[in-house]
Image (tube, rainbow, N blue to C red; front, top):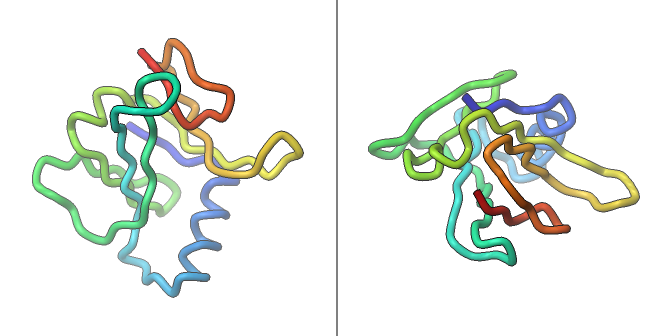
Length: 108
């Protein structure tokens, strides 16, 4: 399972509204090779399930994750920070052994 914090939920709803995306849109969360720690997170809006996707819903947000990415993301929480140390989405991933300073890449 992948979950969404209250702050992330508020930001997702704000972005969907700004981009005029309907209620059928959710988030596609992915993991790709790259970044300073070896693997990097991907986050985008999506409205269709792809073959092989794991689909979750938390706090009314639909989350689409391909099976390969899910192996790295099981138990992860999507969070949002708007503090002085940086603004943006952050992944609280219990599977990450290391992550870079920006929080956009990790290794297992």
